[in-house]
Structure formats: structure tokens, C-alpha cells
Length: 407
Ligand code: HEC
Ligand code: HEC
Ligand code: HEC
Ligand code: HEC
Image (tube, rainbow, N blue to C red):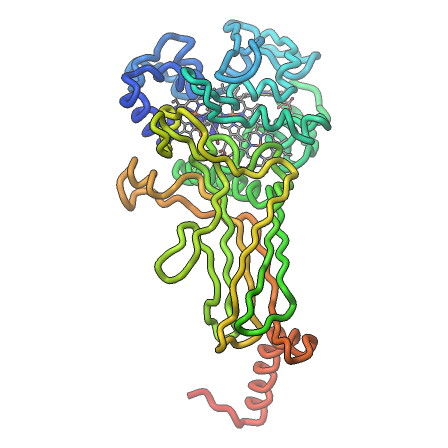
């Protein structure tokens, strides 16, 4: 995503919309993180990229990050660069035949990432991206687990060493960092055909959270039953979701189905006319100066709502429903935590309907059963696993004895 920070088609659509809405006031602001070289070289504005050099198209690329020699803190890209022959990096004993090398401790710390992964509105200071600051307040900062540990090592939710050499002439190291720097973006990586990164993004999302489902073992027809779903942000070192979390969506889908396939209770992202309830969506909602919710974060004037899940935090949802008289026991309750990089309506609005489908990524799932209170649970508990093998066995016997003939 760093290499595509400028060419990313989603970014391109949004930055043009932002530029139009603000009469070009945000052109340089957005570009400072999405094409830092374009800004440093004075090639932006204009935002249309007509003066942009080839190297500035490469977004957040090698030479930019390794030319950063210092920073005036975090947020809104206060980097200091020293372009030239010297490249800065995380080792104090690096030698290269191609360039001079300097050690930059900043590269080994989250504050380096915090240069860009912390965004406030340039006029009114509304927080748009608080990845760095929510990390800073977390268990992970306290225990010295950095962004690099999770995002630049094979560990995904913890540091795991990746021994090797970063160049053929360099010494063998205990760890050299991975530079695919994957987050949760399976949408744009898919659009760009970056298959490896798309898969890694899905894998990362699938390690971000855990889900525990509590349902009563038995329930009487007609009486209210309450089920509880507990979602824990167990793997992300910041809010879940984070980044442009006014665009990202995480939600829990619940489905209770009886053994005849009758849907008894359902939550879906939007709810619908067929009786499904709207699910809670975990993200931020920004408001414009009139207080209306907006996805155009450059117009944000306030944060209307924020129910993202903090690092290590558990949130619990309760759902109440009753079993209809015709319920066929047992009832299966399935819960699925989903992630979407952006609302489909926004992508349809930007690109046209039917052009890009935003994938729904399953992060984690859990299932539990509710049994008939009038029968011993042990006998019922065997039912789902037992009927299928039994049917196969009966068929096999019938076949052997010649009693069963395929039509
Ligand atoms: C987003 C900024 C960023 C970009 C883009 C980037 N690097 Fe790095 N690079 C880093 C950071 C940060 C580290 C140190 C990570 C650590 O300490 O865990 C690093 C480490 C390195 C190292 C030391 C060995 C290693 O892998 O740990 C080399 C060599 C290197 N980068 C080369 C490159 C090259 C070549 C590219 C382009 C293909 C590149 N970098 C792109 C930030 C960046
Ligand atoms: C110069 C600014 C800059 C710096 C420094 C920077 N990033 Fe980024 N990063 C970006 C931008 C911009 C994007 C979004 C690109 C896009 O989606 O179009 C991004 C994307 C990402 C993503 C992918 C997000 C997703 O949704 O999948 C991850 C993960 C990430 N950065 C981690 C890091 C880490 C870790 C560091 C520090 C080692 C770092 N970044 C340093 C600007 C930066
Ligand atoms: C303990 C491991 C861990 C640490 C530490 C960590 N992350 Fe993440 N990060 C994750 C996981 C897991 C996800 C996927 C879930 C999500 O989107 O929140 C993720 C997602 C992301 C995303 C994509 C978010 C989205 O949904 O668009 C970005 C950007 C990112 N991280 C940047 C950072 C930065 C910058 C830091 C340091 C300030 C950092 N991360 C620290 C594990 C970690
Ligand atoms: C201080 C740095 C910074 C500034 C300024 C900034 N961004 Fe970003 N932008 C990021 C980072 C970091 C991400 C990745 C966060 C994530 O993946 O959730 C990102 C992600 C995005 C995305 C999501 C892309 C995707 O592939 O899903 C869009 C769209 C975007 N930015 C548009 C803009 C626009 C428009 C502006 C100006 C109004 C802007 N950005 C200003 C750092 C910045």
C-alpha cells in the first residue's frame, strides 16, 4: 500500500473530491503523506498530478523513508528529510558500496510511523486517524511492542524474527524487516492485483479479534432468550478498525436457525425488510459543520460517534429473541465478525455502480446450539454429528445387500 499511496485508485477519487470541495486547500495537505516526494519537490499542487515526476508517483517509497533523517514529532507528516548520498536506517554498522549509511534510531520506533499514521484536520483539529496515539495509550506501547514488530515481521500480531541479509554484501542479521507492511486492505490490494498482499491482509484481519458466544443450553418456545457475543480486540495494537476508520466497517452478523432451516433471528449490516435487525457497526462517524454525518473527512467538524474496539478491550453485544411455536430443535446460533474497507455505496458513488465490489472479509466465527428443554441434552447433542454418518451407513448396507438401486 505504501508503494501505491499515490496511485491507489480509491485515494485518487477521494483526493479529487476533497480538492473540489475545498477549492484546492487540501491539495498539499493530503499529498504530504500520499506522495511526500511530490510535495518536497514542489510538484504538487496541482493535485491532478500533471507536474508529478515518475518517482513521486511511487508514493511512500524506499528513498523517501530512508532519506528521513529526523522528525518534528508525530501527526500530519512533520518529517525532516536530507536528500543526497546518505541513506538512514535501523542499523549502526551498515556499510554499502552504493551510498553512505547513517543510523536512525527513529526507524526502530513507532514514532517513525506516527509521522503519517496520525492525522488531524488542518483547520479545526478534529482527529481523523489516531492509529499512533491509540497505540501510545495501549498495553503494546507499555510493553515496547512497536508498529514494526507487528507490521514488518512475519509474526502478524507479535514480533517474530526474520533472519537473513538485506543485501548480498551485508552481514547475516538476526532480523531484517519485511517491507510489504500489510494492514487490512484486501480491497485495494485486490483491485491492484497484489495477490500476496491481499492474502496477507486477510490473514491479518483473521488474527485481529476473538469472539465468544454465550447462549442458554436449552430454551422454552415462546419465552425470551438472551444471547451474548463478546468481541475482543486481541491482536491489533490500536483501535479496531483504525486508520481511516470513518470509512472502514466492522460488524457482527448473528443468525439463529432451527433444524428445519427456519431463520429465527438475524442481524445484518443494514437490517432489512425480511425481519433482520441492523447490526452494530464498529467505526467512527464524523460530522460536518451542520452536524450531519459525512464520509468526506476533509469536511469534518466533529466526531459524532466512536465505538471502535480499543487494544485488548472486550465489547459485549446482547441479543434477545424468542423461539416460535413451530421451532424444530436444536437451534444453531452462528456469529460472524466481518470487515469491509469501505461502504459499497461510497465506492459505487465514486467509481460507478457495479465497477468494484468491496469484499466482505470474515474475521472470526463462533457457533453454539440451543436444545429442547424437554429432552436430555446428551441425546440431542449427538443428533447433528450422528444423522449424517448414520444415513451413509444405512445407504452402504442397502447397497451391499442390493436393496438400493440408483434411479
Ligand atoms: C514506510 C517507510 C519505508 C519504506 C517505504 C521503505 N522502508 Fe526500508 N525500512 C523502514 C524501517 C522503519 C526500517 C526498520 C524496521 C525495523 O527496525 O524493524 C527499514 C529497514 C530497512 C533496511 C534494513 C534491513 C531490514 O530490512 O530491516 C533496508 C536495507 C531497507 N529498509 C531498504 C528499503 C528498500 C530497498 C525499500 C524499497 C523497496 C524500503 N526500505 C522502503 C522504512 C521504510
Ligand atoms: C510518509 C508517510 C508514511 C509513513 C512514514 C508511514 N506510512 Fe504507512 N501508509 C501511509 C499511507 C499514505 C498509506 C495509505 C496508502 C493507501 O491506502 O492509499 C499507508 C498504509 C499503510 C498500511 C496499510 C494499511 C491498510 O489499510 O492495509 C500499513 C499497515 C502501514 N501503512 C504501516 C506503516 C508502518 C508500520 C510504518 C512505520 C514503519 C508506516 N506505515 C510509515 C503513509 C505512511
Ligand atoms: C500487536 C500487533 C500490532 C501493532 C503493535 C500494531 N498493529 Fe496495526 N494492525 C494490526 C492488526 C491485527 C491489524 C488488522 C486489524 C485492524 O484493521 O485494526 C492492523 C491494522 C493496521 C492498519 C490498517 C487499518 C485499517 O483497517 O485500515 C494500519 C494502517 C496499521 N495497522 C498501522 C499501524 C501502526 C502505524 C502501528 C503503530 C503505531 C501499528 N499498526 C501497530 C496489528 C498491530
Ligand atoms: C498525515 C498523513 C495523511 C494525510 C495528511 C492524509 N492521509 Fe490519507 N491516509 C494516510 C494513511 C496513513 C492512510 C492509511 C490508513 C488506513 O489504511 O486505514 C490513509 C488512507 C487514505 C485512504 C484510504 C485508501 C485505501 O486504500 O483504503 C484515502 C481514500 C485517503 N487516505 C485519502 C486522503 C485524502 C483525500 C486526504 C486529504 C484530505 C488525506 N488522505 C490526507 C495518511 C494521510
